Length: 171
Image 1 (spheres, one colour):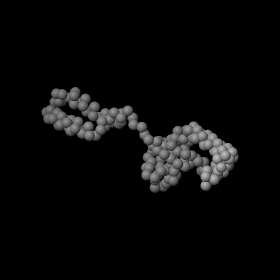
Image 2 (image 1 turned 60 degrees about the vertical axis):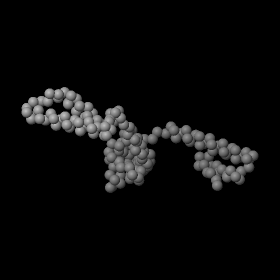
Image 3 (image 1 turned 60 degrees about the horizontal axis):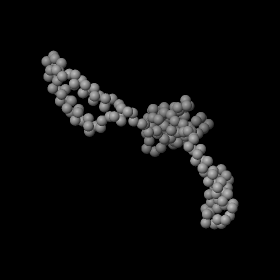
């Protein structure tokens, strides 16, 4: 089996068939390894274009990306990974190719949205449920006083509890 490198245009013979004392094999192997090292280092420096999905129509099979650099990129359905449903405003990374109609995305990956601090501090639904049930009981008890034309005696703590609970819902 031969390994062929387009960069160096050298053919590397099978390791089993090579005499370890053969200097041409050692030179070719060194060139191949140095080319790979250079290739890996350039991959780290390449910046992938990012942007937001402007719109994507799954039925029609295309959409557009508004690139962070201001460029509008055509997004064909073939560039979207299977199982991904794109919505306007989603952050994406994409590879771009120039076509006769302009730039088009060749491949696409969705950038995972990082949770905001408010989302990270948000209580779990299992923790909120007992609080809501207790708050409903307190509000139900205060409706009797409201029906009589008076505000509840302890309206401040009720309002504060409602504000704290609203923080968990407003994320």
